[in-house]
Image 1 (spheres, rainbow, N blue to C red):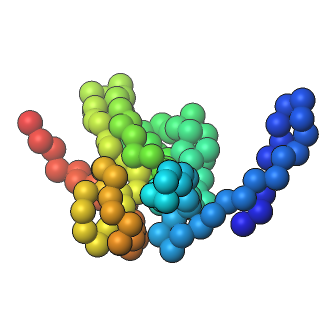
Image 2 (cartoon, rainbow, N blue to C red):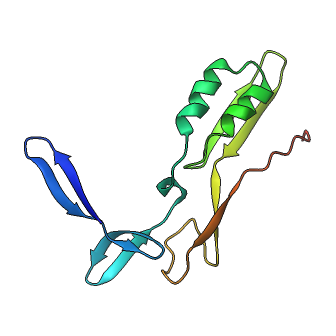
Image 3 (spheres, rainbow, N blue to C red):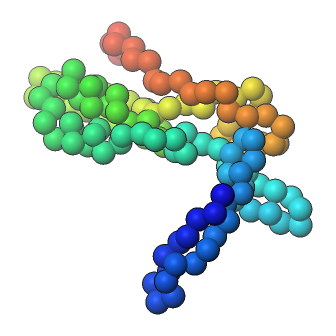
Amino acid sequence: MHEEIYVKGVGYVPYNVYLARNGVVIANYSNVIIVMNWTGMYPTDEVATFLYFDIARNLSDFLNALSYFKVGIQNFAYADRYGNIGIFAWGLYPIVMGGDPRAVMLGNGHMTGSASYRLNTSPTY
């Protein structure tokens, strides 16, 4: 795929983006090709999360805001004037056919989808 990237003082510079069946090629060292595929490569709406945080009045509003957050699993803390507190690890979790998705994996598989966090509203003490 051909792209043009603007470089300050130079102008637009041509740049080729190479795709593999399981992501974007980010490096090629001595014919060892490194490909990256992650949930951030797909369109999402994280900005809405933070805009809805600004108007949230309760836990339900807060969780609704979180539903827009997909990329880069983050920890979000919640506390309100009624004594409710919580922490949520929120985002899309990759589903892979094998291996450990938290580390570099062999390129013989691919991400088969993603799963959203499921809320457990049962209190734990």
